[in-house]
Length: 286
Image (cartoon, rainbow, N blue to C red):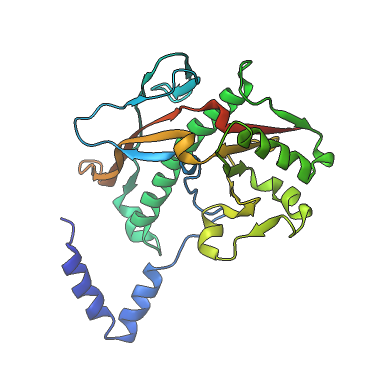
């Protein structure tokens, strides 16, 4: 039977009274040796996040003169919607079921239960962003794309190309480019542009989430899931799309007592809609 928070606090208070107890707490707080930081969700920052009330259906009104795109329930197929003035957003369930043998809990020097939950959530965020960036690529590759991708050789990328990509969005009306999404490997291009244009983030909290700074007031986000030969630019979220959250990230206990394993069912149900294809432009780096 699992302890309540109050019971855990009592145990910690008791351990803190002795040197041996404090050493035991210190050992339990050790982190495993890792190669990479846990993945943080990035793609949904391009959208207005709409948390659906219970019993509501994800229907949204749109301008019938604009082409819209939604992601199918499998998360890979993207559907184009033309002329309709109302859109239904398919919802996709993203789930994982991590399990830990009880023997491992005893053997590890760190809180393996918390670590496994964090890693599982990271994988869900990764699946979410794969869905979103696949959607961006589909829109930019559409023969009827509102903004033609800008092709440039890697060693010839300049501030003019970034300005042109941002201008493609802003020329469609009174909207601005709010976000830039790229692989972190391309930050070397941004840094070469110089501090006259690039304003870096200065807090470790922002840098850990992939928010690297801003360029022409557009916030730069990085993700290893974005191909190195692609940089995406998006308009302000309210003029670009909606990220639907029917069931927010949920963690439920799912132990297997017969197999002597502690486990969780971690899941969410989400969907994505881009209702304004004029709000996306792309740099294709050759």
